[in-house]
Image (cartoon, rainbow, N blue to C red; front, side, top):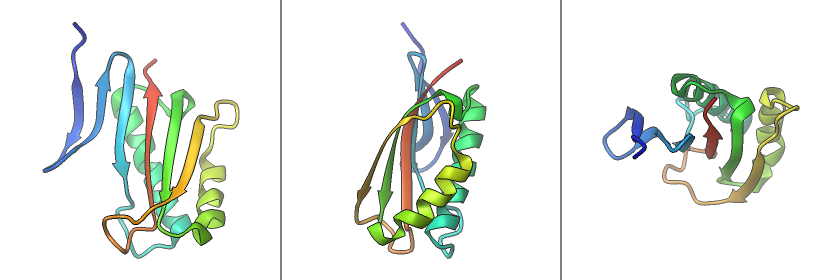
Length: 117
């Protein structure tokens, strides 16, 4: 049987769960919700890098990513941060949708799945 490892547990969720060779990221939101969508996305991607490193992997091993935007008019700014961060040799599958997020100050939320090394 494969063990389940939980990273960065909080009151209602865990930042990432490792199981069966995969890292499942919880919905990541910016630490600073006063930033615009580009700034929030850059902050989220920094957190993703840190979680993946803690799990023993990195963004080159991302399999899929789901991005939730509070307003699709923020797509260009979010994509600027994404494009600056993206490992172009190892792009994950990605979906981006507009969604009402739990906090009105949040402009972006991201979740994904990565493979372990």
